[in-house]
Length: 384
Image (cartoon, rainbow, N blue to C red):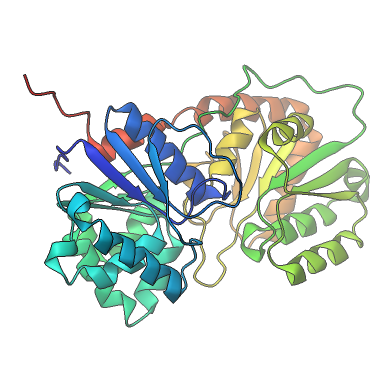
């Protein structure tokens, strides 16, 4: 990929931005920050916010009068904003950082006056399957890709998924992997095992959703030998947007021979404390319908706090977890191997320390600045 985007102004348009939480919201925030750090003039168009005050950002932000969903009314309202500000966008770089704005542009792209000079897209994984399996969206996505100047993906898995389903993207691709959030506190080295601890704590941080694998982790831990189950606690952090699944998790937890604690959604500073109290991090994601794990930023965060990781080898997880070095990657159809991975880590504090040190090194392997530079290039030179 040799295309250089010479324009200094970048309009990043997203339906997922602070105060929303989650991987895509974090990605759009950090990419905007890193692009501004390349001395680009950045303006973010984001969904309306629920809170009264706004954070201080190193770029301009415009809160659009829409909620940021993918329903038709919201997409039409975004389209109206495109039309209203078309003269600004026409000679600029427009970065559609997630699927919502892409859906709007799929309709607007038929009007040349509404297409920007440079159109940049980022794909994560699940939306590729959604777009390809829908017979109406499939040709619109192909056309959108043809009209794009550059396209980024977050992992090798997403690269393969996109080019398999939409081969026209292959000549425009760059890799923009996730990295640690800019305010994340990375520890210097894994703390030694606390002798006073009576339990080994396994931690999962993810929304309560079948794809995130809390049930698989719980079942794997429950399959441990009785003497090992006596040594563990399982902590689950994350918001519940599927009440039936939360109910199923709690019912399963009640049958376990070890304590299971549900923390709910916690602020970042408290989350750091939970990482520090934990011994093993687990997020055993699975494929769920059209939803896949494109990368898994939380694996890097766990590594940056010195925790070994247990995960399923699905989607782009192998870009975030190095098997046998920073943790264990297990096929999702091998529950006995998953239990064995936990057994190894529970039985060996030395192995936890060794993998924790490797995780610390790997967590800083990726950089938002590198991803922004791959997508937009260095800042354009000033005219004399």
